[in-house]
Image (cartoon, rainbow, N blue to C red):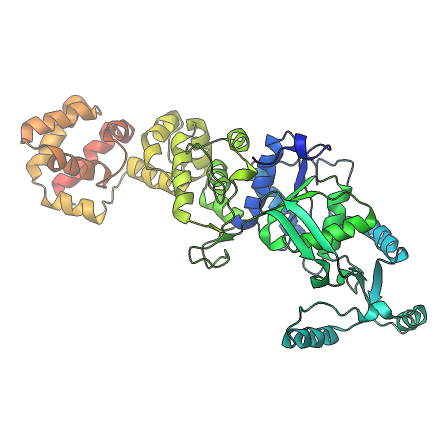
Length: 478
């Protein structure tokens, strides 16, 4: 069975997405956001958005705004976070420094944290020495043994210091991961770790864990690359007397070659997908099945995806990104979309070409041949251009077709107008042709293509005048 908040936590279910705004939102991390949003919807709980921008040198407000735009475009609306402020506000970590200071002080007063004056060079030498000796590259704890006078002297001298959390040796940190099952970590392998940088900003381990507790997060669902962070964060929360959430670590997304997903291996930002013309429902349906299985293979709306989402269906093996599968869901989404939705999606590309009275007929005619708005632009030009430029393949068919064929087509057009079934039947009778020999020249002369939407639907949009000019153009050999 998957996660059920009623059995596992007395508190209201709450999960979160906590990105660092250091770049555009990509498929790998937006999948984590989607999983959390789906789980919150399924559990009738809260999806929280927190901006982790404590690293001032890397944070950028433009990326914070961009990721919020991306989440809203996908329909991943948060119930707590920037905008819909809740009782745990603020939800931007750079605005929570006073809270972190309070908890740093509590740990120092309890003897659970101490200043560390070791330089980066000293730490690097110690790491290399430990590795060469076959020992884990954990901190030796040398500054833990400093006396109060020596600490005061170093501070007075202006020596930079981090703050380290003291991890007692000989203990075991255990927790039951919702996805990966029982986990055990020896505290002696962890070592004392930095919770505050020398510039005074909190380290990820600290601010991430403290905020989860203070914001009432009951389940932390995140990538498996954070699995080894969990024992450190559990120790921190226990030392502070704060509630410890449950953890669920999901498999990461990799490229087809098994390497981490990146731009080189096909990863795209949500912004790129939106600009290319992907529909949000297509992206959601693909990502919801990337490392998670559903019983239904149909396109599901957000409520349907949430109802079928179950942590017991999350795969433990890495999820391989497959652009062809993403295109499959785009195709399914386009073909199943309401016509008004499709017109709104393509309008910015074709509204200057398609007459207002023909918009819905245009959408209905071409929807089976659409993947992106650029495809709509192609068919708008095919239908409404006054001068048709045949494709190379269509040109070859036109060149090899006898002029008598086009004369018969002209007569059929004059008699039957844009009724393609009647027109093609008359040409069939007059020429004795059928199948490919009949329909390829007709399609080539009317659309300049050999494939595409049904001519039954296209010809009324092309109209008798344009169709007549195109046949005349073929008869003239131009």
